[in-house]
Image 1 (cartoon, rainbow, N blue to C red):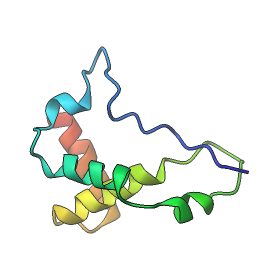
Image 2: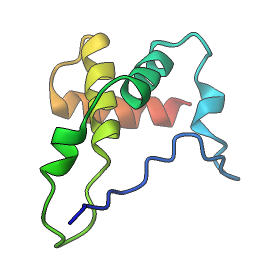
Image 3: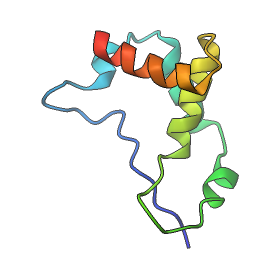
Image 4: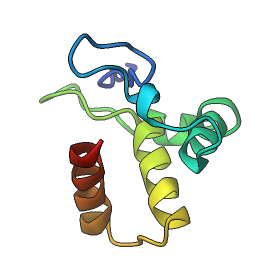
Length: 93
């Protein structure tokens, strides 16, 4: 049974707030990381490890890997600090 993940809608425009992509410069490292994860990495082993259909759908593994890589590339190695940085940077946008 395939597992359904929460959708990763990074390109979806919103009325309020506007699309996240509007706040990220074209040459930003995070755009490269998203492209790398979406186009080059094979995460099928990770996705196939999700077997339980109980509870809420998990976050897309591509999203989680992109967050980790972006944190590591920015010098943030703690998962709690990565989560905090996501909130702080979203509030300043």
